[in-house]
Image 1 (cartoon, rainbow, N blue to C red):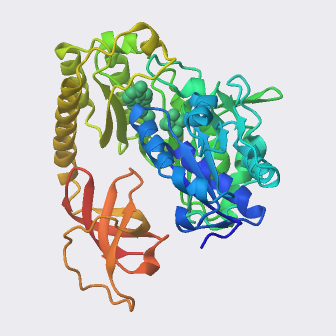
Image 2 (cartoon, rainbow, N blue to C red):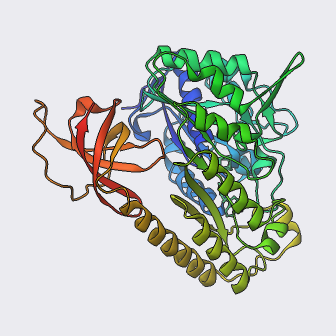
Image 3 (tube, rainbow, N blue to C red):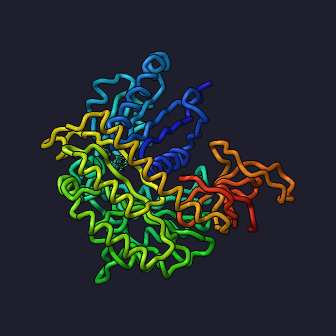
Length: 463
Ligand code: 5AD
Ligand code: SF4
């Protein structure tokens, strides 16, 4: 049965979107709405969308399509499309999908509850897009955050900045999320304090280029390293992470903060996108593969146990076999912990789409994707073998989604039934082990018994 004051949010895309959905859910709950377990029970259905690749948009279009009938039958149903794709397509979404009631850009989601109320009062369809030059109006949404019932109450994302000024040729983000804007440091620290007072143990600081956080207060300039220093000693906080990093003008103080502050996790997600200087130039990335590799070497010199993760785009406009070989060489050189690999997807309005042909055929993109992934998996699998027999600290996140064949374990003399749990090391390695539900949310030690490219299999050691 549908209750009038229930909502359901489905989130696509990056961590920024996950955080936005959490804030929107908090805003609605403050107004008396209840979260529904599935869309069939909800009166308000929200899709928080991503535009970074065409595939992400296609999925949303198909999901929206499934609501055409129901929207005709259930007159009070409200369907809202928010986030990056809403911003990108704007009025077109309303024009081509009668069942969509609200289209709201990522910079306007602080007004979503008001828009929903407006529709409930007088049925109309609403469009609310952000001006990419204005990126300050969301501050209220972040600062009014309530740590209600996030799925993992001991982990939280905190935004330190929004938007991006880099304009990589392939990327839609600056167009949909607007220009870079760093939040006031005291707001970030207050938010982190509130979260830790409510039991949060791990905070991930978020920004599209988190390493370029810069906030000026009177005569002082604060950087990301300062944010980490300021939140480091909050009681209850055990871990600090930050994503995602841009490899140019990388502030070395961040590496020193990692080395010197025990709560800052030794994990750096820093996408290279390509290993070919020619392609990097065409992507407008402003660094060469050698400069990137030097930066990673510097990170390893300062933070010896650091793990590195990256993103790569294969099949970018004019990418030939030599370019792709350069990318493989970079992957071989860096020895990433893991890489996210994507096939180039032209985004309307970006410089690449305006000026260059998407001329690498899809089968070649697919083959390069598979080949790079195989290489990366082989490297990660080799490196992970060195962890066998070692004791690693993890924050236990919950039951493992995929059932793995794990080592049977009888050492646990705890009462509850044993189930397969997962957690992460400070270096962001996924660890699977058998344990009891009461370990969820705790930091414990496990001993690695077996390792694959993406998963470490372990036994429970001690709290
Ligand atoms: N096509 C494919 N992948 C893309 N990414 C960003 N834009 C595109 C695009 N047009 C990838 C980049 C980025 C990640 C979030 O998505 O690798 O780091
Ligand atoms: Fe996140 Fe970029 Fe996708 Fe927007 S377009 S949801 S910022 S990944």
